[in-house]
Amino acid sequence: MTNESSATGLMLTGIEIRLHDRQLITLSSHVPPARVLTVMGPSGSGKSTLLAYIGGFLDPVFQAQGRITIGGDDLTGIAPEERRTGILFQDPLLFPHMSVGANVAFAVPAGISGRKERQRIAAEALTEVELDGFADRDPATLSGGQKARVALTRVLVSRPRLLLLDEPFSKLDMALRQQMRQLVFAKARNANLPVILVTHDEADAEAAGGETHRIEGSLG
Image 1 (tube, rainbow, N blue to C red):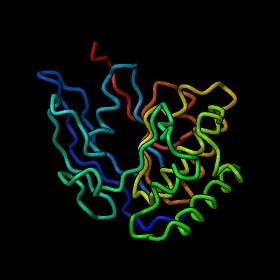
Image 2 (image 1 turned 30 degrees about the vertical axis):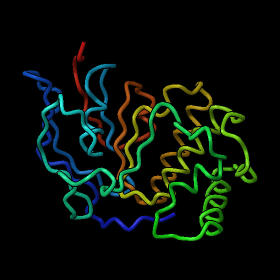
Image 3 (image 1 turned 135 degrees about the vertical axis):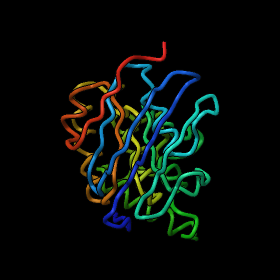
C-alpha cells in the first residue's frame, strides 16, 4: 500500500490546547513521511487531546488553536471525515456484527465500487498481515494479536494521509507488543505515512525512533 502525501509531510504549527485556565499542550513540529513523532506523558496528561485535535474530534470543553497541514494542504477546521486520518486506539474496535473481511472492506474508500473488488482488496490486505483465509471469521474468535492486526489493516486500506496511534500496544502482552510495534511502524514506513504516537511507555518511543515530545503533569 502506498500513500501520495508529498515530501513535506505533516506540519504542526503553534498548537496550543487548554482546559479552562490550564495549558495542556504546546507544540510545533514537522513529521516527515515515514517518520514518527512520539508524544510521551503520564496517564491523564492530555496526550490524547492532541490526537483528537489533529483528527478533528476534540471535545468542545477544550480550547485549541494552531495549524495542521499535510502535503501542503491545510486540515485545520475541516470536517474529520475529510482529513483522511487513520487512527488506532488501545482497543481494536472491530464491528462485532461483521466478519473480519467485512470489517476491512468497510474501510475501503467509497470511490472503489463493487462488492467483489472491495472483498478482493480486503482479502489481499489480510494476507499481507499473515491473516490469509481469515475473511469469513467472526472477530470474536480472534486472539488479541489477530484483532490488532485486523484493526491495523482496516486503517491502512482506508488510504489515510497520516496515522495517529493512541497507545495501541498498551493492552497486548509483552511478546505481542513487540511484534505489533514492528508491524505497525513497518507498515507506516511502507505507506510513507507521517505518524504521531502517544504513549507512556519508553519502549514504544524507542521502537518508533524519531523525535519525542514530553508532557508533564496530569488532568487529575
